[in-house]
Amino acid sequence: MAEATQKQLLHLVIGGELSSLEGVTFTDLEKVDIVGLYPNYAAAYAVWKQKAQMTVDSAQTRYFIVHLHRLLDPEAAGA
Image: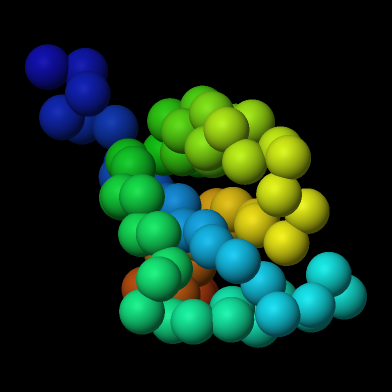
């Protein structure tokens, strides 16, 4: 019941091969790994960390956490 009353702060975890180490442009958008949506930062971070460790040998591959709650409600306090 406590989970249902907590505010949902959606986070998206995505990753893939970047065209350059200096930017965040993916080489092929069709190959971007959309890992999933998570209800809070802690859950997203755990998955991000796992995916990042799995690709540690590929310098061009990066994973990101996107704070969707900030995009969906940019004027919310704490966003």
